[in-house]
Length: 514
Image 1 (tube, rainbow, N blue to C red):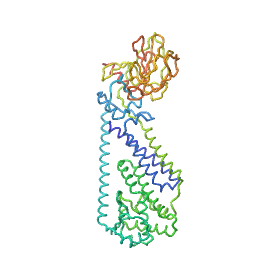
Image 2: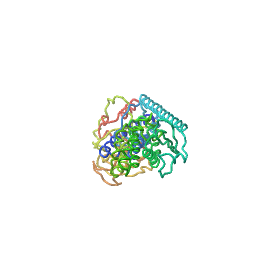
Image 3: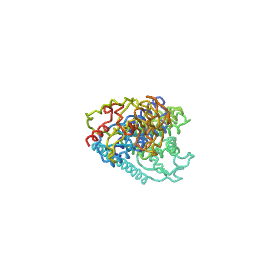
């Protein structure tokens, strides 16, 4: 079951990634200043990763607001079914689609073998992709390690003589210089190293100072930390192209943010010098940079021309309220929506409904109205409960928590309790005494709206459905008795086989043939 749950969570991650990308790109068109804000893009990556993680947690399917996806199933042993429900976080019954087994229960089912193979195939493919991403990361680290080893460390005398650091009033990290066509970059996380190409000395002194300021601004903003976090989240979600795009935009925002900090209040001549240095660097370097380093002049998101334009003209401003709303409201809302809109998995046995209809109600019994506006049977009266071999004493109706329950006929409330007959397994329960020796019982309710001794009329609200007591998901368990003996509720409210889940019909067919 975990394989299928993981496949479902992966699909939810793809949808959440598309939603985050469309949201941020739409806002960026209205406020171009978003391009230089790191937080919204990083939180977009994190929100999509959170969707994947939450989709794997037990019980999240209970929060879903959309109908369950019914998938083919096969009969299984009770132990296998319990394990499947446990692995899926109870998602089959949380949907209310296929009969939450509550101890009155029925024949358990398990996903069809073809579906399980599909889930396992995706799990194997994902692990292979994750291993490939880790291998690429290690390869990039080795390349950077080789560059660091080949570079010459600059001592304080070398730095004092270097035009790029002559007038800087900052605490400098370790600085190394290499005779290779690379971009100036910060390498490492715990103790970053500033790696400079020797050809940088051929630039104008003001250009060298601006480039050095750019890299040191990355360090002051802790950009290496956030870049590593983004790369890690992208590796975990290597299959999601939108996460890669969000990560590229975050790296692009870091570069623009540093450009804005370095060029703030500087004259137009220095802006032009900075842009010229960027163009010259791009022409000289052999590679666009590395995933494990922040590089001045890296070809981030194929938008170098746009960056040069922003360097020359300035990065557009963006209202802080908009950036804050996106960072701390819109994207977390997207994460919540991805959970609330993630459908649960339900299982059905692909079998034709039984041709035999329920017996007509005896003339001596009255006709009752339905206890809920819409009825869908998830477990019939009299079916065999596989683990115990006992017959089901009532009917289960699929119903989401909060669905109104009404009295099917006039009567007097004889029980309104959470401890019926001294047992908590029934949960919140209401029982009604009717005419003709009839009594109805409604278990596992969420709320009770009537009190013991109260007289009710047909159609009056008596409570709402829920998942209290010993259940695996929300539904209504209804029992009807006459003179102390349980009878089929269909004898009073009519044939319901035309409005039942496939699993319920298959269990009924199996029970009749046994």
